[in-house]
Image 1 (spheres, rainbow over the protein chains, first blue to last red):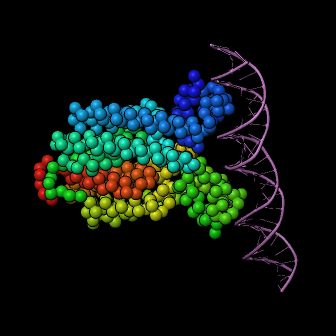
Image 2 (image 1 turned 180 degrees about the vertical axis):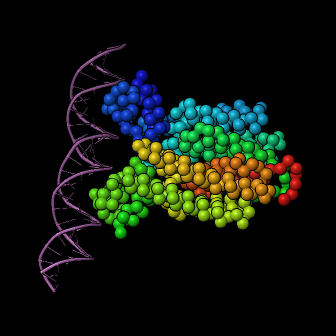
Image 3 (image 1 turned 60 degrees about the vertical axis):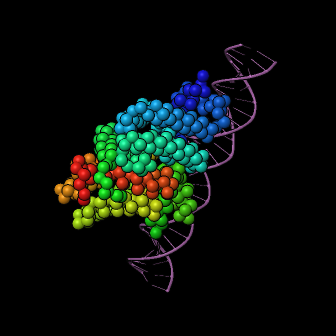
Length: 197
Length: 197
DNA sequence: GATATACTGACGACCGTTCGTAAGGGGTGA
DNA sequence: TCACCCCTTACGAACGGTCGTCAGTATATC
């Protein structure tokens, strides 16, 4: 079924070259059809793009939710580190995450509203998941810093790894991940009571 | 002189809409001339873009260097916090930083090599500046973690703030900056003993 | 025959770029 | 002072391309 093929190839191309950098002719060529045939399955370029965005949104939310929900019997340290590792792995292995990151970061101008709307939904939902998980760890005295603060800092850590992944230098990504993680974990488990911001 | 005007307006547009999202006609319109007139001053779109990139590169390097060089009599904590604040301020105030971040993050495909080359030069030089500064602070026992690790972690912090700035939610940027900074500073000053400062 | 799918052909719009030309100012020599 | 040339700057017209899109048609399946 070329409906799926079109989606697959479009996802790959949009992930690498972005919306403006990918033409319908490029997509059709990858699938092995003519660009006009895309209109049999989609209303147009915007429709195709938005369907992919919604798919990715649903997919990313589900992955995060499943992972966090099934993580309450592990230690927070394990959970977070694995989350970081799987983030790196999925970025390199699967174009869906790359598509999501790239096109929410730099959306096509005329679809900005709709894209950013989905992005904010995603951020809110994921943040909620993490805050709950951090609260749980805080109650179990795994961390000493407030769950909201620790959650925000972890979210920032994920962002910075995303940046590094897009920049593309693997060894640098690895070093930065190691360093950030080390400092982060020391920070959230800090025990000096006299310390304040 | 419209040479400067073209540069100025092109910088603004490239910063907001990116390379592909900005046409020569758009730039010319902002300046108040026709698009053909741009060719009086520049070889073409690529030439204009690359000149802006080099300007921004030089500018960013100089700002960082001047700031770090003149910071050795302040405490590291002050220096880093001010660096973060001025990063946020400059991003919102001046399009040059926005241009630099956006177009090194997502460069036009056919200029990828040249752009990424400049970016790596920038990263290397800035990292060097920071590592030296962190080493200085380490020697003065302002931090407990290794300078290279602390520097990397701080660089990651900057990246994550950059992401948040581009996402555009101001209150969220502020909260994330606060949280990340708090965790970061606790992390780099972490000690096994529960000693007061 | 109805339906789903993919094609040919063509469209208007916009893209970056080139060419020839016109306007303006400054310096020069008569 | 004036006429001349040069050089910079800007523009109209047009080029070859690519873009997303649409209408009409052919083909295969059931």
